Amino acid sequence: MVYDVFTFLVGGKAGEGVKKAGSVAAHIFSSMGRHVFQLDDYMSLIRGGHNFSVVSTSSHSITSHYMKANLVVNFDKRSCDTHINDVADKGIIIFNSDEQENVDGIGIPLSSEAEKYPMKKLMYGVGAVAILSSTIGMSKDQMNQNIKNQYPRGIEDNIKFADSIYDIVKERCKNKYPLERGYKERPIITGNDAISLGAIAGGLDTYFGYPMTPASSILHFLAKQAENFGLAVVHAESELAVINMAIGAAFTGAKSMVGTSGGGFALMTEGISLAGITETPILCVLSMRPGPATGVPTYTEQADLNFALSAGHGDFLRIIASPGTVEEAYYLTAKMLDLVWKFQTPGILLTEKHLSESSMTIDLDIDRAKWAESKMHNGGNYKRYKDTADGISPMLFPPSKEIIKWNSYEHDEIGITTESANMIEKMHNKRNKKLTELIEHLKTQETVNIIRGEHPTNIFAYGSTYMSVLEALKYGKLNPTTVQPVYLSPLPVWELVEFINQDNIVIEQSITGQFASLLKEKAGLNIRSVIKRYDGRPFDPIELSIKIREELE
Image 1 (cartoon, rainbow, N blue to C red):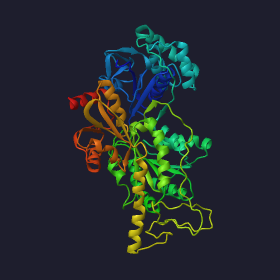
Image 2: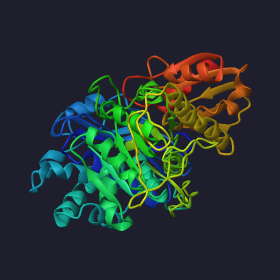
Image 3: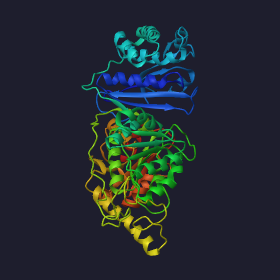
């Protein structure tokens, strides 16, 4: 094991409780005060597709899953065949002996044991928890309490089934992997949970969404919390409705956010342009998955970067930022809500499936943040698009005796449609002033995360790939400087000047190297090589550490 990392992998058919078993395992590790990272891998099938959950835990901070597992539990033959090479050195495979034979591992009659109970296939997940509990030396009483807490339906059957599986495993490998306890129990949340909580902390009023993996759980999370935080959460009929409803809500003064993935965002781009010319403060969460078109709906990629950078037609300010960790997703979402309101323009929180749906233990201050007030109208004739020194016009919301006119056509300061050459130029200049003001503001903020290393080579990454890089460097005991730009538009080139003439490597999940191209074009960096992965799966830290070492030597 690497600095006491222990990994549990459970796999089977969709509908057999695989994801739940992984979540319960994560909570078991967390209750021991250990750090946890959980990845769920699933096909776009409600029933029958191969699912697996990988849960890695350590008494130290951990920012990625490890595919080489110490304990692999397979419910069926396909899972066994799929994960035959995912066993760590001295790891063990426990398989369903009713499904296959001649496996180098420990056979457990999961199917025949589950047949004794009404829920049958759903019992497999409980069996995986029992196998894990026995293997790490947990007592039956502790295991049964966890089962009561995590599986509220059919408690008696679940405990009876778990006890029988526990005893079978006990004979072969009880307490094979005793785990050191950590010093503090921490909550486990997904990236989408963090985004949702960050939006609430940032003063969110309304959320509009149409379900699209991997952004869907933001809608579900906020709907559950709507009453607790006074939110209006709307499941609209389409992404077209989502973006236009959000713009309408912002017109009334409501802090609005929407969420989607690439295909849904494509439908929203006309609305993004509308927000650009109406100077509407709106935040869009774009959680990337492989494309084009439907792509691979339940997997991860970073190929929508260029799309986000140029989303919508015409020239207007787009603020784009990407969190590198689940914890950062919380704080950055709140900050982005503040920025779009301060500068009255659309913003995009760019993330990907790996961060959106993976879970990890974190420390958060979830109090609502106190942000600067928006520039408001304070008397006289109201001009919605008043040409100010910084380009930011005073806001006013209904009900009001003043006329408040937002216009999708080019317009004058009041909002009256115009085709005057002079006025078109004036309003372009007016809106463009906000870019200069935004850059000056960002120069006072943390826009790039830099961890200094002793090796002369620098590694650049953004989004969830940054988590993989951090874990790979820790695993391989490598010490280059790591650089993670948090803001991608405007790119904080003032922070990157020092790297222009240095040796730079980029790591990203895009076949065309979109992030590397951005760094070359905007920051003038020399990029020696790009380590890419674009098969829908996130980087594994062990494999990635080998590739990084090859580049550093």
